[in-house]
Length: 320
Picture 1 (tube, helix red, strand yellow):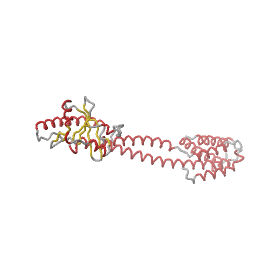
Picture 2 (cartoon, rainbow, N blue to C red):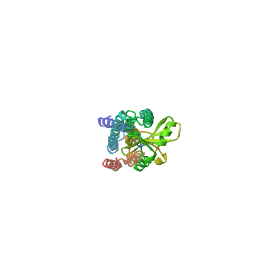
Picture 3 (cartoon, helix red, strand yellow):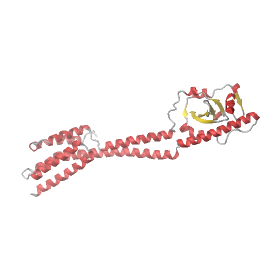
Picture 4 (cartoon, rainbow, N blue to C red):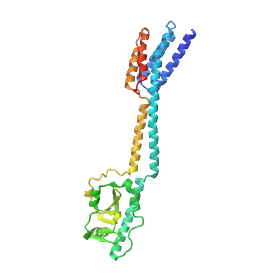
């Protein structure tokens, strides 16, 4: 076997190996079929010394090399886009980590709202005593406003200024008024009958103003505490019909949940994008596979000039 023949067969095996790696990477049927067909063509020349070995070299120069170059360019472009997706995923993960370190969770909220209800019940019991004894003693428990300042942003529901106005509207003649607080007379009467047993129901906010809504444990009635005026009133829930009660996640937790869902989608997109080949190029590869599958392809090998030009033109397009 002459040296040139040995050299061309060696180079042919190298080209086919490159094509095999790309077929494994892309997992695209048309690429795999071209790889298999290229192997058949190589073996045909390797097993038949009478064939013009230069035609095998011409086949790779005009066709295989262009296919490999095209697929490599697609692979490189895909990897660049996948890298951008993973950069976004990494940034989202960093943001979630920072938010998780500072977020007040449902567990914190559920525990603290029980403590807050206890503070309110003790404060109302003390307010009743102050009103009864005409005392000037301050009735509210220590740090009674810390609960709302901590959780209002994330856990309280938004209401309109008009709804807020309706909720805190009252007739002064129906009120007990103390220097420290104001409370509806009938509300205080009901609190006494129920032995001041209430639980936190919902938190509401309108701009910077907040309202805490409480429910009697053994009675389907509600009242509100308006901290900015130390005001206690019965709460008409019909005013809040338009409020969306469908979620009890904090704002931060919702953002974390959304980022997690987004990252899942980005991961899926990255996996699909990694081996994506534009449909136009798949169609071209299919067309070329049909040509090299022709049993008489050796007789028409010079026609690969046209196909090679099409492949090379693809390298200059913006399809990918």
